[in-house]
Image 1 (cartoon, rainbow, N blue to C red):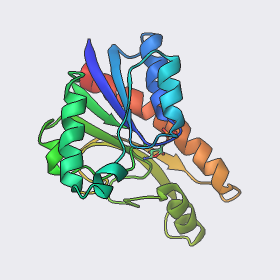
Image 2 (image 1 turned 60 degrees about the horizontal axis):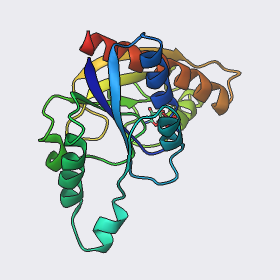
Image 3 (image 1 turned 90 degrees about the vertical axis):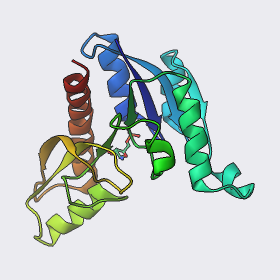
Image 4 (image 1 turned 180 degrees about the vertical axis):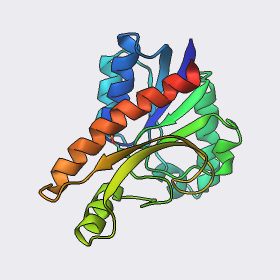
Amino acid sequence: MKRLAVLISGNGSNLQALIDATQVGELEAKIVAVVSNRRDAYGLIRAEQANIPTLYFPLKTYLEAGHSREAYDADLAKMVLAYQPDLMILAGWMHVLSPAFLDYFPGRVLNLHPALPGQFAGTHAIQRAYEAFQRGEIEHTGVMVHWVIPEIDAGPVIATANVPIYTMDSLADLETRMHATEHRLLVEAIRGITA
Ligand code: GRF
């Protein structure tokens, strides 16, 4: 059974989708650790409720002690390595990983991003897509799962799903539709990789 380490920074609804999928056998994998760079990430509570080991690893203390992001990334990698994961899943992990981390896990780190390849890289992607739709620049948006390279929301694409935007939509309507698509696509993508 493939061992997954999930890296999060917030609510963890995508982590929950993975937890639920592994519990009902929809995903033949084991989540061996949940790592957060934010102490108040609700995803840590989701992990504890599912009896999954958690690790809180803030960047701030590194920077305050005069250490570099690369030093943080390298130590983070060593911490994650201790759980012997086969696959690292970035599910709402809000920190750009450098080669100091990625070099420990070549071809084994994937990310979920709420936009289609080449569109709305970075933060607030759902809101930016919503505004672009309002300006008539796009007709729909989507979600992607991709392998991670040292570039924001780029790297070889594993899976994508288009998400419609309707004229009557509020931003909240679109966010709900996007997250539902993310939960499905992330499980499917990992199932395809771990099968
Ligand atoms: C998701 O939209 C993900 O694509 C993005 O951050 C959000 C995290 O949501 N990178 P959650 O914490 O899994 O609910």
